Length: 400
Image (cartoon, rainbow, N blue to C red):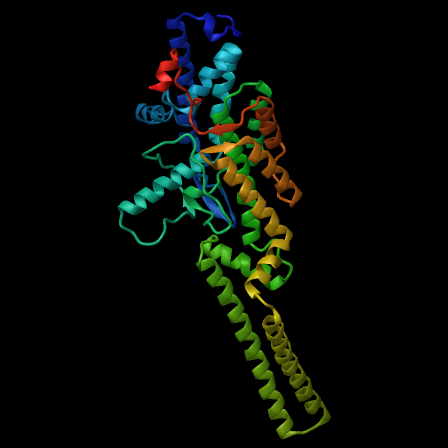
């Protein structure tokens, strides 16, 4: 069979056999990726492979039950199967093989295996009637009850950045490579292209939010330390994250007050016992320190009273912060692209605003949007095929 033979040149029986072979190939590859993906454990703020004491385990072949479970996620109505069909129609058998390879690699590097395992841990945790949250410090090799090829995360600045809603298992560089290769093939299938953009943008949003929540953009040492400490304890989960930060500032204030009180007691005791110039000077220095702290507190209170609307002033100050502007624009762009139906024009405008305000994402996102704009595709949707409209052969049908 000619590698470039188009699907329209095949007999119906050949078409069915070809699509079934490509589909079975994709199912086997996805099942192999899921079975051979190693267990991971959290080390610091990221996950690393949790290898067995004897070294990395040998690759296991998927069982019939596992292949059956994956087959339900790659049905004829799914985006992966439809992409294979479109790729064969547009680029022949070679395009179909390329689509299978890219679909398999996207599933492997998009973080879905990690998220599916976390979802299974959540399901088992709920059935066990255990309290609290599942322990994500180690994610073992578990086979999920339900398999999905791609599920859009819901990541924002206030979301908890772990478990089934995170992209901890995403390999950013490999994902960019897959996106570039798919673009070069010239195969057009907007639902899968939408998956690609969602994964790329959520990877950037996840990384940027994580850095901000860990205090990487803070100017003061205390702010950076407390945010990093609070994130390690809560993974950014509100309101515990803010409570930990507030508690840290309270502890810092109490520690400072305790040290000042101890120094003041020592100075008073020394002065009452031996009123030398040294003890007098120490007492005067402590008095000046206490007076300056009280004066600064009073000054801040007076400034707040003089402002007409403190909440508005705080919001304006936050909007001027470069990191806040970048995250806000990146959140807006990600929300537009992740919608079930989104406008290409709105996405391109949001992408330009995001770049202007310092929100960075990989540049391959822009060519995808520009190509859709040039093709006059106004709207992308998560549906596996385009909307179909009724065709009226008789104008009397419209009147009816």
